[in-house]
Image (cartoon, rainbow, N blue to C red):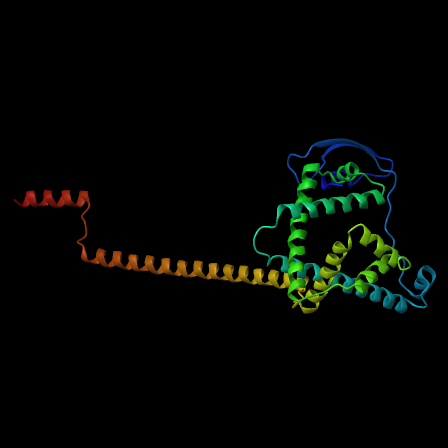
Length: 302
């Protein structure tokens, strides 16, 4: 829930009720305001069990806590290795796609767009969802969905052409055995029948394209130069660098201010000395009363 909602609950006791307004989205200034009535039923604290051999054995069937740790560590490392492989493949294909020069033929992009849309709708049907339900759950407008799918189709079309070019350059060929092996992956017992059906319906060229691109992807990933980056460590180093820069600026600013102050004091001292020197050279001014008395004395003498 938005922080405006959660902040209203602080201090409420079990059985207490409260009505208040809050913003439906705390990140948008023009988000609509909602009125709610809340009743606190109970307070619950999260209590974690003690991690020991007994816990590992009773809850997860491990002989010891150490064995459980080793198993979890292995699963995490396996997941990271799988994710890294997929990420490397995606980035390599994307980098290859950038090398394609010129515009992609619109008719080919449209074919890819229709294929992606068909695959997505099939996936939704398997989940028991309609497109309207999917868009409604995510708050997406149909226009935005089509625009996003169009951008994805443009990328896939460009990358597919790049893989085709790589396959031609490396002279990758697709044999009947390659096709049967691919068909057997999804239907081990009916690969021959599937091959016959693909031949009769004219779909052999499309599966050849798929296999040829798969070979190109395998070649690309094997030969791609990869640089691993620890983003967490990089972010920490950048944060340290910013702190050092800020500290240097603050020190420099303080030093500059100190130097400016010293320079100002020197100027003031110099001006004061000049004024004192000038004062010594100039004749002293007589006061008005003293000047009048001197004139009267001269008059008496006369």
